[in-house]
Length: 497
Image (cartoon, rainbow, N blue to C red):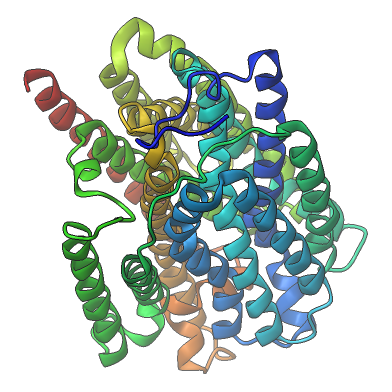
């Protein structure tokens, strides 16, 4: 079954018949393995810091190196899928992820673990855009919203599953076990995908290559994320951070300028002119800013202020994933009934309202208020994300599905990284101020927002920490309100256009 020269996918190729549901299940399995690893580290931070004698800067990079490589290589992986075939890149990503997981299990130094986490991010970057492109290739266009709803639900369920699985493992084994599960699991997912996908073809076009565009996008994204990660520790106005952000702006501006004239662009200018693509990507980024940032904050809130163990905290994060799944699978029906604009607005409104309940509640209210709040946050995020993912790719040509999906994923992951950085900085600042009142905390580096991970891991309940959590919830609620404004303005213009 050959592709036409235009790069459009043959109608028979986009519909795998009854087998398409098995393909979706296999792709979701690989997705779950990758996404669980992205969040499983949260509960293992104190154990790793103690065993590897890691300082605050080491711990920050052990956490953030995954995000850095993940966001930087997403667009590259999508383009590779368009060029060589999404199935090949997916399987290569799962294999790389498996090898890096085994290596991380037995890392004996902070530097070694940072290197392994970086490779894990590259493997994960190969899985996400190719997985979504294969889902779209297996289903006819009429079923894309439903299929992508289930695909998005797999992401939402797996993120809170990480802390739960991590807490269970840490109750019985050493910290390396949180990585050990990823090795065989990703290998198994790779084998299952190879068997189920069979000769399923998507991507693998005969288009040219764009090394300058790939290099500029990877460098620009990496410099921007690096500046976000290191900004609180080095100072936002330090020479290093200013150089990072300046070089990122120059590289990304050069990337978009180059793409306008490139013979085989990574992201064609016509793609950025598709309103549904830009709006969907932006809305999804705002949604993940809140969701990932809240997941980062919530695991610490439950352990620090509520006094739960890692396993107990993981169990209490389940409503976030359950709500996300319910919202994702109901998103298509909601969009058909009230439209995409109404669905997105309701999702953001639900998230913002639940965050205000968490913000205004008292810590003596117990878990009931928290549980209901995070359930609603999960539901609203799932509703928004599934709709936004479909909106972003609804008018994208099949020949650029991989690159478009990767670009949209990169924008979303930038939002997720910002959510963790900004909401984490709110907590880190409070923890640092509390530490400044502690005579034993004399190291000035450990009292900066850049040591968010270490400060929060060792923080004790107090007014400073309570205020930090309230600030984090307030910032997340503000971003949700911003999401409503973006939806109202952008989609209203789309209607009038």
